[in-house]
Length: 464
Image 1: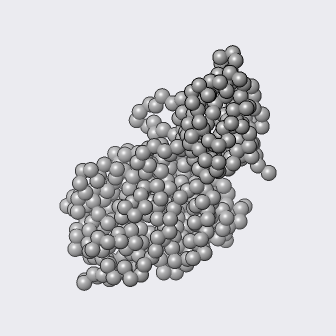
Image 2: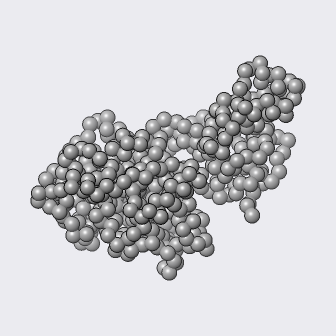
Image 3: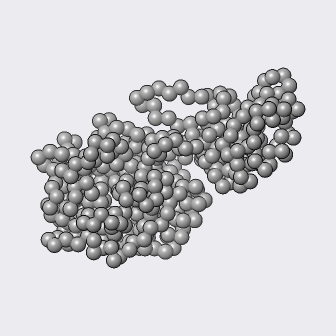
């Protein structure tokens, strides 16, 4: 039985109806309007094209209803996030969706996420638009989900001067405290003492030391789920320095850590019966006399030696030590999130993160839930012959391929070497950013695949 918000339980006269209509079905919707409203919509040439919006006046001249075009007959059932336009296009006021709505949970979520703006440094003149939760919607759960997603967006959007390695760790600690989870942090040279040499090597050049955050939550006898997130708070590229244009968005290089925290918050808030662990290797890839160099060779926690082919391929190095730690516990499910390669964007663009796994059942489950949650991802192959691209003359492996081909695949293959005992393992090479505004997805940080993985965990493991 679904819970309803007070607004969903009773729609008052002060709430203006929003009629959803496909192009083919608009004639039927028009019959629901008063003659004055119908005549106005005809005069304005409203044809219910996808995303079209029109507020129509009644006989007294006051707004009678809003019309929202969904384009095809599938409408919001096919693309529920189109409803995010309601948050940005409707005039100020309170509204409700007239009639039965397909996928009401996602439609309401899209509206709430469409209202998001990053306002830490600049005030935004937001429209005061309220939408009553649609019938059949668990309003409290969706509102909580939107709040958590916006938390993840805020983290990614925060620039590196206000989100150092210490600041990101503090945000993780605050989340752990809010959910009564255990928090542990290994900082600076203690990383060497605790055998995390690659995390230390990447982060040692920064004025703010590197660290590994370890969060544990849930019953110790519950199924083990471990999330790993790349936490590079800023990436200069190291001595293989990025261009100024390439550095502009490097605040988002901790997007994997933000996504892991977002996913963890969704899981903990839902009370899913798992023993959750979150591992965040957090560094700044800075330039100083202590920077790690191309050609350097480092040991890893796994015992695999790594030659540095490029210091701008630092994310996979810090993930390698964290994944090794995760794998030592043999969790029932291991997932990592990382803004890892530009090659992934070349292959699939910014809106469709690739994921990699050798577990066929897990791959099918991820693909199915991706469609159900409208949190899009696409499977890419762990093509083992490409492992040779990472060969080194002096170490067990190089951190980059010399050819430049198959960059996302070779990065995934590199990570897979550090996960040997966990069968249910998936790597998500996310972008973590909306380069332009889309319905429900304002320009800026986006914890991609967080809702998907939280739903995956909920379906795989029993609720409390």
